[in-house]
Amino acid sequence: MSLDIHIVPILSDNYVYLARDSESGKVLCVDPGEAAPVLAKAEDLGWEIDTILITHHHGDHVAGVKTLKAATGATVIGPGGDSQEIPGLDQSVADGDTFAFGSETFRVMGVYGHTAGHVTFFAEGDKALFSGDALFSVGCGRFFEGTAADMWPGLLKLRELPDATRVYCGHEYTATNVAFAASIDGQNAELRRYAEIVAVLRSEGMPTIPANLGLEKKINPFLRADDPAFAEMHGFKGQEGVAFLAHIRAGKDSF
Image 1 (cartoon, rainbow, N blue to C red):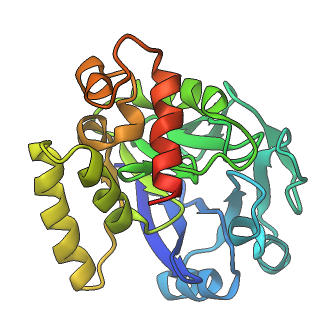
Image 2 (cartoon, rainbow, N blue to C red; image 1 turned 180 degrees about the vertical axis):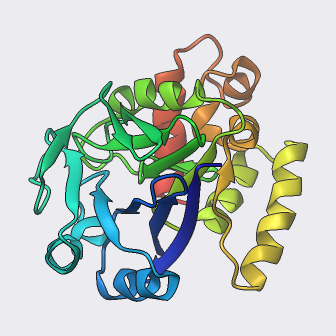
Image 3 (cartoon, helix red, strand yellow; image 1 turned 60 degrees about the vertical axis):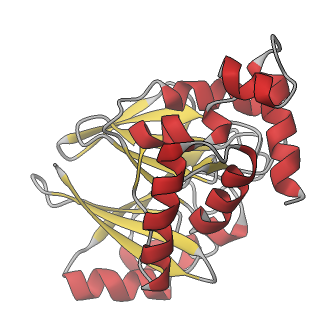
């Protein structure tokens, strides 16, 4: 793997990521909702941050950007098409763009709905996906600025990524996501096994991230909204995946 990735927990349940390219020594930070813990972790590691990646404009993902940029001189890369401006944005990216980071190439994938211009970053060599609040382990983001019709095409794009992809998302929501998924997909043996693993990890204060995308394709209800058997179980036989996705998200919102 070309990227050495470290999780920096912040706020109540957010994750910021620090990643170092082993070949070039370049260091990036993803979604710094706070600056101080990130700077402290980088200092502990002996790393100098030179790039900041932003998935969307929400404060718990960008509040530390200006301080971090001032302290490090890092280049800020994020979505120019989001509904609010990304603080300190230097390089605007959109769905389909690629950019180099040391020996790694990142592909930008738009997944809209949580915010109007939300992007995710896929490290093609390392098979690491920084998904922000678009895709969680066994979950997806709330539709704050869009609808199921906006979110579904993006989720389908993420589902096409390799099974070996490691998913680094913006929050530690896995336990509650698993509980909801079990309430609508209780006979899923893979989901039951994962629930046991998650319970152990969380009881020990350990992160459940990164998630494995191959497993997510089997247990994440939001990635399975076009599964005919799953949809039929809930009265959506023969309907488009987007209709069932809307139903599942509404269920999670009130769970």
